[in-house]
Amino acid sequence: MTPQPPFTDEHEELRRSARGFIERELAPQAQEWEEREWFPDELFGKLAAQGLLGLKYPEEYGGQGGDYLHEAVLCEEMARVGSGGTAAGLGAHINIATPPIWKFGTDDQKQRYLVPAIAGERIGALGITEPGAGSDVASIATRAERVDGGFVVNGEKTYITNGVRADFIVTAVKTTQDGGHHGISFLIVDRGEGVESAALHKLGWHASDTATISYQDVYVPEENLLGELNEGFKLIMANFQWERLAMALGAVGAIALAWERTAQFARERTTFGRPLSGHQVIRHKLADLASTAYAARCVTYDALRRFVAGEEPLKEVTMAKLLTQRACFEVMDECLQIHGGAGYMREYWVERAARDARLGPIGGGSDEIMREILGRALAL
Image (cartoon, rainbow, N blue to C red; front, side):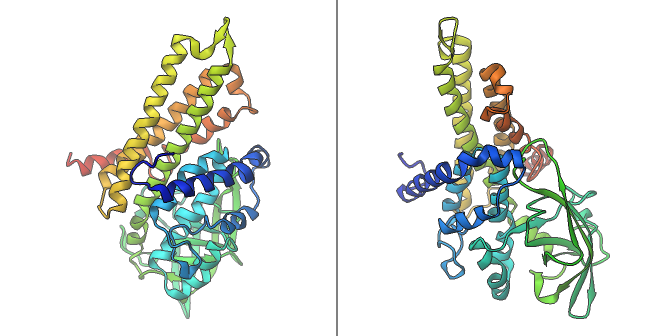
């Protein structure tokens, strides 16, 4: 495969290795995990053994010493698991829960949490969203009261990926009475007394555990304060760009895979004496889907190039996230249509792909929020 900038031959070698591992070790069991609504925790250790949990992290913490481009390859290839929930659970650990510890943690925190997370020995989750505070992060109500030696946390988080299985939750809390963004802090909360999870059941992503987490008089020691007291909003904003790029890359991978499989199905399925692809209406649909796949990749790779070059590509990343998530859902719907009645059956991958894709325009910043950010960036 010829590298497409910003990727190099090294990245394509990683792509081949990651794809081989995913197709060999993960994809064959995707259907089983979906039906069980759970993938085994052992997967974290399996990925760790391949060096895939710490691609962008320094070697001193057990990582591979790579960068965001290495991680970008994995984000794309995870679509080939064939289970959006499995990809989401692993991705939340890699791209959402651990980056704040890497960026803002003390060396002690990195040793206690990042090192075992990269080794697949401890599983992480990020706890920000609440029943009354989604996109409006400033409205979080979970509180942390100062006590001798630390904090006592009370409140509730919801829609938390890995919320049932997580060993630790990087949790946003209010630490002052002030309104607005000031007064938000982050605590690394260990699973233990006072931390209870209730599993949620979803339209898609069945293999991932999503939960409401309640905190009832949970003691958190001072050494688990992540970053500066009352300055947690900076921590929230710091990883948004990468989280949204990761989602765009995942959609690019999913669209490409869906096109490959649907085109192959159309070549092999015969109707009225010829392949489906021999009918102009289907051929034109496939041409349109190929164009969408290419456009999604172009806009995402452009944003990625700017991101790794050290720019602040707020506009480009927002466009990539907005365009790819809606496009992914629409592509899956068209692919399902081309499969006809078979596409509506659970044994076909496209039924699951269509459900899994619906989360994209909501998670990581809804379409509505993305348009609002973009409108401001365009000085509208």
